Image 1 (cartoon, rainbow, N blue to C red):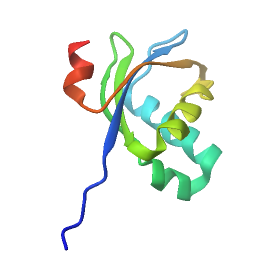
Image 2 (cartoon, one colour):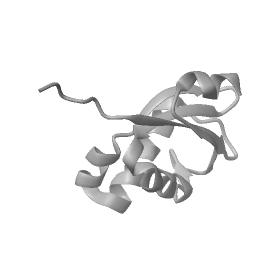
Image 3 (cartoon, rainbow, N blue to C red):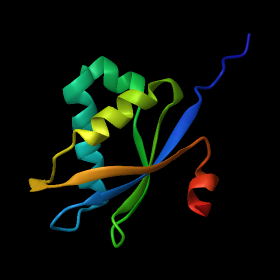
Image 4 (cartoon, helix red, strand yellow):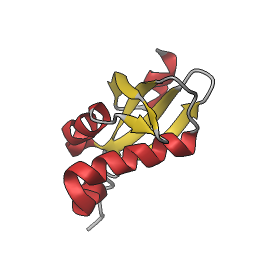
Length: 104
């Protein structure tokens, strides 16, 4: 019997803060946010991946498991620091494909 691959959802988000953040700092804050709220087992279920991050615009695309959209949104809204600086993360759009996010 074939194994179905997990379905994903993609978040387009914006990071606001007093300084510019790198992609690695943002991804580290995302993973820490999920791990702090839901623990290691929750982190593996949410399965966040940073697909793209534009350091000039401070915008990015994030992938997560389709059944864990609420958990991902909750952890994004609770991020208050990135790399030691205060920051806020806003989700602007959620989609089933990357193409739909890039066209918007």
